[in-house]
Image (cartoon, rainbow, N blue to C red; front, side):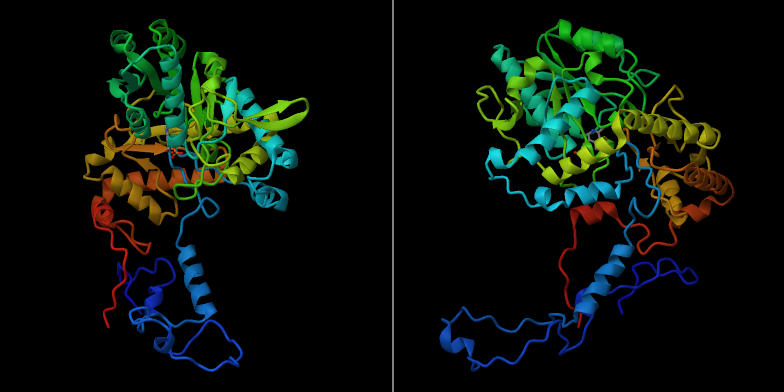
Length: 498
Ligand SMILES: Cc1ncc(COP(=O)(O)O)c(C=O)c1O
């Protein structure tokens, strides 16, 4: 048996010590049983050219099927998942993914439909995508939607390419994109990928875009502003109408990162606030799996004047038939094969159809209520750097705990021992030691109360036993991996020590 990476006598933690497969098994075990071959055995070197015959592979594990199944099942039980527990990761909207979504995505006619099947024989799939476009338009107030991008960041890049294509068509070459300093890292990355210089706008003392700075920075060389609403502090940009007016008055366009749409669905249409381009993160707002970086979906919505630049094909309804329209000479082209990640679209479609307009609004209201409940209950225990009104998430920091030498990372790590996934930490970057909590609408008051109780106990312990925090968490298999080293020098290959 290999040793657990962290050995703490007296602490039981998770239940198994699990070696790698190479350290399991014993000689002669197999995962199959086949009848004896009626053919004579042939020495490969007598029939294959020299150099083409592989020698024996040392230390290849010899295992039964059950060995392998149990190994992977045990490993899967170490995973933290939204199906297992509360996952209050701010900005990531880790809401529950209803199983009905999964059932629908597995319907053979949807799951096995080949994307090369002609339109006439793909009416069901095309209808689903057409209707999903319509629902997203209705929810957001945008005029046209492309479902093709495969993630939020991919949607951002697609949206910025659309803006660029529009400005090029106007004969304008602009070089800059304005962005609040609270922006998610993918925003500057997407703009830079499209060749723009990113100009930061500071946030004011209330956590809003500094309007004086915006007025000063916005000029005729600026292609767009890329903002998030509600912003990454969970606060609605209350000057949004004035912001969009300032940007438009200089010929620029307004891009809204829709990652936080869970705070607005059914209540406020982003399109009504003067936004020209918006991306949706279906895996946040519309309950599709996040899935370790993909496959996801980050559809892009635009106002009418930008529709010609959207990726092809446009899915349209013409004379009662759904068609893929490739005849879009001004389109930026394709950003993903076929229609994007269709299975994800089916799940989002199911979620929207299941909830309906009233349910969508209620989900949003519950998400905002849950976040504000947590904020109100924890505001005396953790510092609120921006105490103004917030929506679906709240951002605390470690100011009070730092007096005792306990940092945000320590708090997050300790929370693991209470059975909760830590909130998002150290983001947004404008908050020193940020702890960003987003409960979503999925959670019951019972669960939220348990989380609050854990956070309160942790705040007390930080005062009374700060030394306990430096080695937390005590229960999981791996306590404090060196994340920088893991990223810079990943050890991905097993080597025999025998
Ligand atoms: C505010 C914001 N914008 C953009 C993104 C990027 O979305 P994705 O992870 O789907 O690429 C995220 C992801 O966490 C986000 O929180």
